[in-house]
Amino acid sequence: MGIIPSGGILNHFLEAYDGIGISRHLTPERNKLQARVAEEVLVLLEKLVDDGYILPKKGSYLDAGCGTGFGIPVFAEYIYRMFGERVTFGIDINKDSLNEARRLWKKLRSHYRENEGSNSISSYMLEEAQNLASFDSDEVRFSEYVISHIRRKWEELGEIRSGIKTKIGKQKDGILEKLVEEEAKKRNIVLNDNKLTIMGLSVEKKGRDKTPYARRPDFALIFTNQVLHWLNDKEKSKFLEKAYEKSKFGAVLAGNISSIGSGMPLIPAYLKTLEEIGVRDITSNPGGYLRHAYNTNPIGSTRERDIRQILNESGWYVEEGYIKTVTTEVKFDDPIEYFRAAKEYGRRAFEDCFGDAYRKDKSHQDRFWAMFEENFRKMLKDPDNPLFANYIPKDMGSLTWDAWEEGTPWVYHQVDVIFLAKKQVIN
Ligand SMILES: C[S@@+](CC[C@H](N)C(=O)[O-])C[C@H]1O[C@@H](n2cnc3c(N)ncnc32)[C@H](O)[C@@H]1O
Image (tube, rainbow, N blue to C red; front, side, top):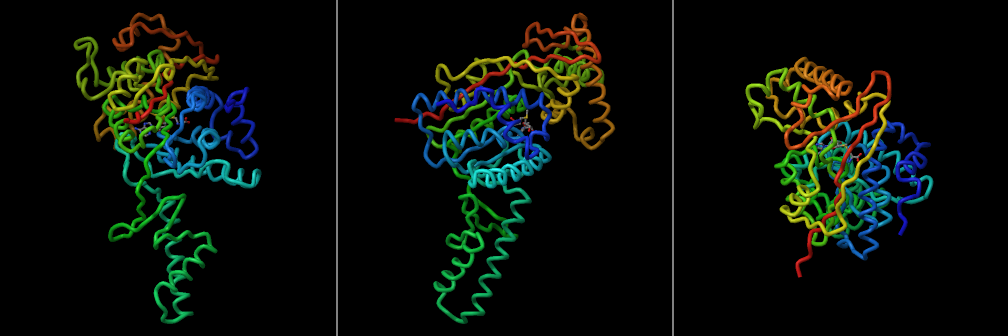
């Protein structure tokens, strides 16, 4: 089919959107990593289409853990080309990323309208910030921004109705509603049995405060790029099971997850920091105390066979040829870029072991992150120091990293499992 341009999707992204300032919002190296692995997911989706697989009709599309990233500017365009217009939802735990995504999306939409005279991407609904493990699968969680937009539309409708009522006097309700509907249509307000229709969703009022409410349509496609590893094992299963319940038979879940070898030497530096602040003690208790409180590998690197098993146990079936492990090499001008990205994306996962007191006290948090960064830099420079080997989690085997010299660029290796799984059709 040849959906992916020969120069790769990152170049497409940079070229296509440079003029509108979208590419400037993200640092190229971070982009490169996310684009490379997103591209691998696209390869599997393209194979699926070439194999003649047809996605369930009308099912919606979920970008699980959308961040500000590729689901917005690039991926949505490919999805549109492969699978046509779909009601599309973006969910993420980070409010700031969602706000950024909202700004990017607005720009992108007007870019398409102006340049191509159409929406050649599906409309995209960015929801209120939610954890994927506990996202509301039945109800669309409108963001404040969308709620106020809907409320304004409702107010406008009320004004239209009372204006027409004054004009036509006492008439049968049917006539009034017909006139209201016609007038609303002129102002781009779609009425459907007194409900508003927004992006194909039928929105009603719910409860005393008349909060806009819409039932979430079932998914046909779920895309998740560089996200699932930030969920611990329980959370991963919770999300996958929910996603399964809310999907149509024949739906597809395509994405990636970081695998063993990623996160060096971030993870050992993290464990060393936990020891220094007293959460963990590897000398008297190598397993660490409060062991239940944290994850020894918060960048939840998962092996191919393990993610296949988690997917299968949640109902998602992985066929032969639809799962692979790939390594991506990225050169950062300074390792701090990588550290900052991990802090932004995985903050919650790294801070999992701390109590509420920590969360309320900014100076505690700053201290922890400063120590963590310092340990990361120390380990980077001296990978052969035998002391550091103690901090590599046992289930990760003997991992090493390349030494780094202050002031020089740093080459990072990210290992990912790329997968595509189906909700099987029961015959
Ligand atoms: C590496 S970024 C990837 C973003 C986007 N998918 C892309 O390809 O550009 C990881 C994203 O996962 C989100 N995330 C991490 N844990 C999450 C959770 N438990 N629920 C929802 N989103 C989460 C982060 O906020 C971040 O936006």
